[in-house]
Image 1 (cartoon, helix red, strand yellow):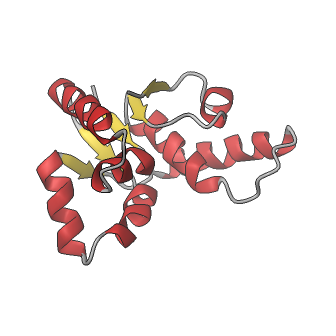
Image 2 (image 1 turned 60 degrees about the vertical axis):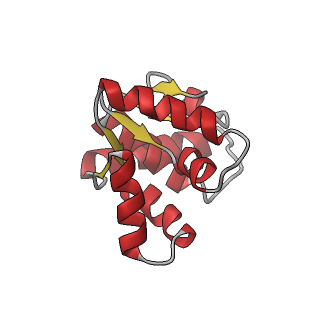
Length: 132
């Protein structure tokens, strides 16, 4: 099983937030079952938490997390899902990174380790969500 990881799960771990151990345990279990991946959006959102690129590469490597860029199919899915969100009256105009992360997970993985802020179940209902 391939598991994509959302930025919030990794920042919880890297910032030693209260839920960090639960997220880490979840990712350890997921790693035993298969590959852990992040997309370009997650990598970009993580970058400010590190001093330099080798530092982020080292941290991700220690966790067994691979980088997998967003494919055109995933980008298309994100755009169409975001359009459906806006057509349904979704108020946020800058939610596209979250839709890209979810579409990347749906296209390139079997599940997504993430906190559901409501839109995942609504616009990616067939995406397996993993949370502590």
